Length: 298
Ligand SMILES: CC(C)(COP(=O)(O)OP(=O)(O)OC[C@H]1O[C@@H](n2cnc3c(N)ncnc32)[C@H](O)[C@@H]1OP(=O)(O)O)[C@@H](O)C(=O)NCCC(=O)NCCS
Image 1 (cartoon, helix red, strand yellow):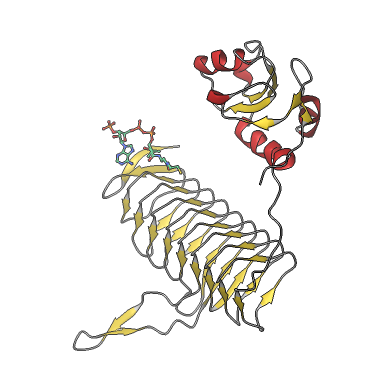
Image 2 (cartoon, rainbow, N blue to C red):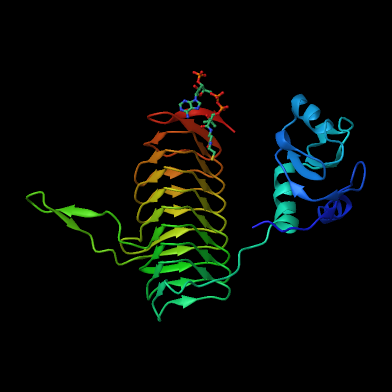
């Protein structure tokens, strides 16, 4: 939700603890660089000569940009080592209002569930008796959270996510009949975790499926039972983590990747678009393809 107020460029610079280069203006809206207009705020993550021309056509604007742009811009600007991050912080602080906290009357929340302060729960969402949800977490519409599931603070869970159902684990009888492994375990989700729309996270056989602090999981991701996804890891759309996969800190898994059961993706590793990972990936290693092979070390 957008806030409808204007802010001075100097106030934005002060907020970012940075210097303002150029005029102190009223900044009234946010715009992509290609659609920048008077009194707008934009950012330039990577240096690009074409962006200089776009910005210089609108001198009454503010740009948060990398130090390579120094001395090249007619518009007001704030130089930053992390322009994208500083832009996001600025938008969140001055141009965005968190939606109101609401628990929908159509949500079915078991009376035994532990719901923290300022938690929103959307329409038709179902929350089971052994679930606990930390303060300031937002649960969207049609979400199912069941089983022994603990969710931390400030998480965002988008519509249609399903968290805590039993996993797809079957043992075959002597005649090959699959018998479901009763899933007695649970799920532990840390703070500031993002869970995308339609994403499913299965509870563990006996222990826990673990998603640590600051993990961001995109829409339509499948996370199998007993997986452990470590801090800051990013798991993008269409990815399937089979059972007991371990994803290291800061790892990046690109869209539509499949990771074989029990594989370990090392810290800071990157799994490229559409990869099929069948072996462990070492830390700080970029892999891609089917089967995934090493492209380079970071
Ligand atoms: C894996 C990745 C990081 C490699 O990027 P890069 O280092 O710039 O690599 P290049 O594009 O220079 O390609 C290097 C080689 O790897 C191959 N390659 C790159 N990505 C590949 C992929 N996903 N699958 C198979 N091969 C791939 C290229 O064909 C090229 O091979 P060649 O040398 O035989 O021509 C990138 O391709 C990728 O998948 N990025 C993820 C993007 C993403 O997550 N987007 C979603 C955002 S929400």
